[in-house]
Amino acid sequence: MTSKDQTADLFAPSEGLHWPEVRAWLQANPQTIADDRSLLEEIGLKPHGRNVVEFGRAALTKLEEAAEREADARKRIESIARANFAAQTQTHVAALDLLEARNHSDLARRLDAAAQGRFGLSGAAIAVEKPGSAPFGWRLLEVGGVDGLLGDHGLTWLGPMFEGLDLFGPASGDIRSVALIRMAPTLGGERNDQARHALCAFGSPEEEGFTPGMGCELVAFIARVVERTAERWPILN
Image (cartoon, rainbow, N blue to C red; front, side, top):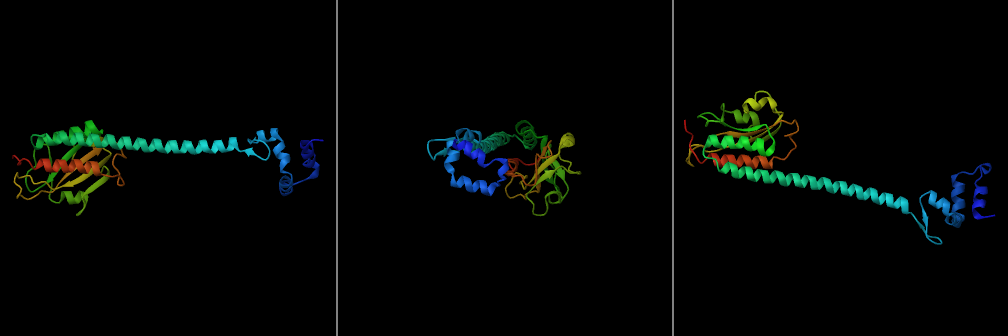
């Protein structure tokens, strides 16, 4: 009688054995399993000579799953890196375009065009507080309007569009989220003139376009370019 026949007889239903007994028997007779090649292949193990068993299929499956997880993570990181690089490139090109503005009105027009054409936004706007007038194409806010939108010491605000934010003209109906950046340009044309409270606003057609937890480095950079460029010229009433 072969070892396979002996094993089958030992674990016959009539014996009524349970796992502790089976385990103890296997520990006492390990070669019985090692010699049963068909059984090893059925449970995904591959024998390699005496007392050597390769956990090939099971081990390979785990390695493949780990490699697939790492590949997916790497693809996500690469995708984010490409998106960030593209956004930075578009930001730098937009900044160069803003620096070529000829006056305040041209600056506002170029900002709005860059927001739509380069970043897929609904629009962008520049607003400045009273007292004093606003350049053509800019929005004029009441005194304290910037603090009312950003808080007394707030520099930025990113989040959903809200009622009463009349900055984007006809495009306001399509805007679902906004980014507001505080500015303080000196608009008299002379460096000793008093800075004015102002802000740079961007509107997105997507609800998740701007969120409170999002970094605002790129839009803040654009706002700084707008702020410094606007100081080149005096306001023409």
